[in-house]
Image (cartoon, rainbow, N blue to C red):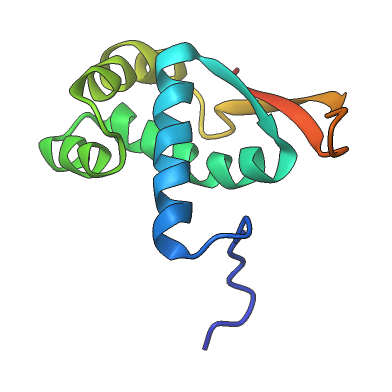
Length: 116
């Protein structure tokens, strides 16, 4: 049964939603912070946090799993070699979401998601 299995849909079907989250995850890894809508940031957090946990373990199978999510080797290398060692003593909560107000055009709440 699927009880309480939350999935943020973002007004997209599965494939475009997966592509969007992969793209946002790669941008976050490469730039350490991005500005997006609140719903996308909350969905992105569910993708990025497990990636950082896998990168901390630094096993070959974990690198393959990270490679399956991120598009470029540059992002994978940066995650494993630069970002993951920062959080070796941290058990979770690698990202923070900072509210920036609403977007003028449509009133969507904008936030900045960044690594702690």
